[in-house]
Length: 390
Image 1 (spheres, helix red, strand yellow):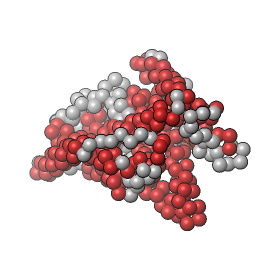
Image 2 (image 1 turned 135 degrees about the horizontal axis):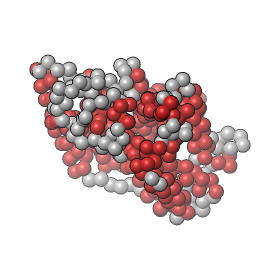
Image 3 (image 1 turned 60 degrees about the vertical axis):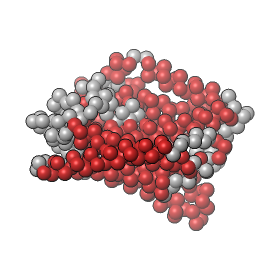
Image 4 (image 1 turned 90 degrees about the horizontal axis):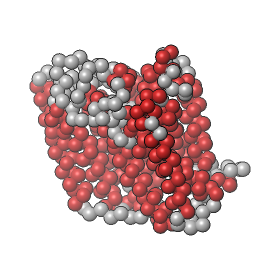
């Protein structure tokens, strides 16, 4: 999305993306979910031990994470408008990523270490871009939002999240628990320091913008600022405080928040787009998103997640599924290829999901999110949410 500009006399669609109640799925509900997973670890640890407790919580997280990845594909590959814009490129990129992932399995431990390390960076960038997309949606719904204030909030978000991430990477905390399966890419202290300066600059600008709005008698925009606070606190708590020395728990804490943001937004967009008779013709899988068919949506999420977690060996402890177990070795077996092929869908999601949320290319999105005015700001230019926006 381009920079937010003064929205002027145009009627604001209201401060909430959907409604005050529904938005809590993106806001407080999504933010609290990682704490619930950490509580699960604490409750299970006395009886299952640390490893068993973490593995159990991570399995719950994996179902949610895989569900949010899976639901991308019915829209990306099924929606006629998206297919018309991108042709076969979505499928070609998807297949290329999967094949490259399988090739990494065959190429030995060193290649796999580099491949797995890339997920730390791609995944974090993907999460930050989605948070940015939500911020732009909320900015689009703030009347008379000054361009400089909007830009300052963006700098605050990027600078704050990058500071937390690169501080962790600088000290190597994320690598401590994963051992030889990832490569420690050392980041000089100058990088998180520079990010912190950007954060401070953005924070001061955002505070000045709030003060100016109050003086002008304009609403400050509580939902927008709440989103910004929740994002920054999630990164700080996950990367620097609560789970900083445990890669699995850090990924769980940061990503589960991102996952639970995404699912209700997809449901809202899909319901608005495909519930009408005309909209149903836009996607052969429209049934998954139509009003009154929420059970089909949940069923698709559950089935997609079940297939994924089984393929990557997360259920190999169950009787009859021991053959799905795999390890990152120099002598890969069949399940290594299958598992890394499915794992590659995460990377494909990071790269392709943003094509769903291109507000500047798909006018339907502005109707679905009640952004009827011709907006050069917040949610109208570039990507909305997802990896390319996020």
